[in-house]
Image 1 (cartoon, rainbow, N blue to C red):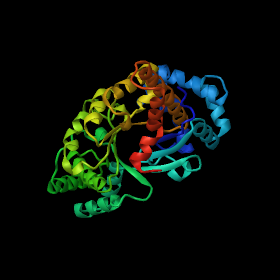
Image 2: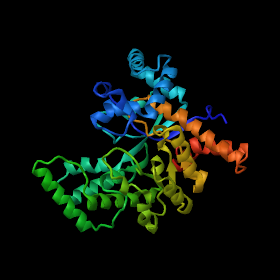
Image 3: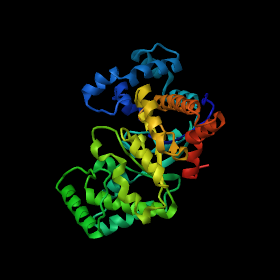
Image 4: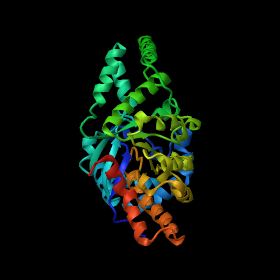
Length: 373
């Protein structure tokens, strides 16, 4: 199968770094979820992902497959030209940007719009942190939090939660009084000079469930980080099965839950949830392109063991540099084609059915789910 002519809808990515910030980032920082200097400056260069990425980027930029040659070529092109090459070569039609990742270091959504259609994904925990600083009492804070997301701001096609990173995916029911108490404790800590990082489980769980009620009202998708990521998360608490209490709750039945990153290494668990809960959707971003070729194929195979193809979407989870958007697009198409070809060989699909499924996964499912046509 040749899927290169299918325009992509990338339903979850991140903003490019501002040039003045990027100069302080080693190139390898974009190719690992680790942030320890030893990982970035040494070990990341020895991953299969990094080795094959250099070859593909060098082919794209017509230079030698060495980091130094690529860096020189990037410098000569400039960031705008590099982005144009990567987005055009990847045939990326639209990106839904979560602009809550390192918000002080990134270029704005408006900057990205010169290359590609952009929609916004609103990160709930970042909004809450901003409002905590701005308000003194819980009633005002909660009122402002709800006003900011009801109705969802113009251009926002989804909410995003990183509860997986902060306290894990097992969400507890929390009363308003308990949430108020924890808000007041947090404000007291700030008054004592502590830096703000929202990692209070009762308050996070409470705010997430308030946001889910609003998402249900508008049938707005809510993206959840699941599975692997940087060392800030506890992978034991990143299993999407922990979301069962929310999925079983009638009040959230109209909320599309989007499980990001193939829930790696919990692919089968994610596929199972998508097969039995109508509101659960999946993607394979981050797993593609970060895993080995074998790992990417196995991940997609396991997602599709049970999950309906109508539930699966493409994303890149690209960050920092535009090359990641191109690499995810290149290998996302390639791996999907290989897995669908296996299904044809097994007699599960006809070639025509496989082509229709490829279009759905690479673009149409996202258009339908996010009502973004």
